[in-house]
Image (cartoon, rainbow, N blue to C red; front, side, top):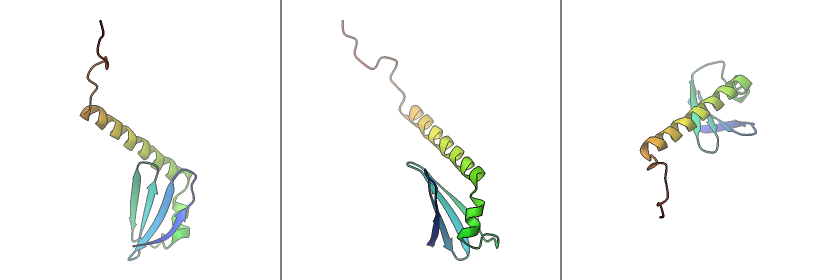
Length: 93
């Protein structure tokens, strides 16, 4: 697998990979990542065509998934490590 390029974005790192005529598209933010394995498709021959695919609507949906991933993580933490009640400090008399 080799990197064939990057797609500029102010908040995401977007990397385009190619391996055996297959394209993968990786989105990263500060805590999460998503990878799209685009497979064999003559319409996605190189970086230029992948850049056309990654339009504002595509980015918006990627960001929505990142938000959902974050909510999933927070909910998992709440289930795994519940607060021990409303009072976190010892009661002093």
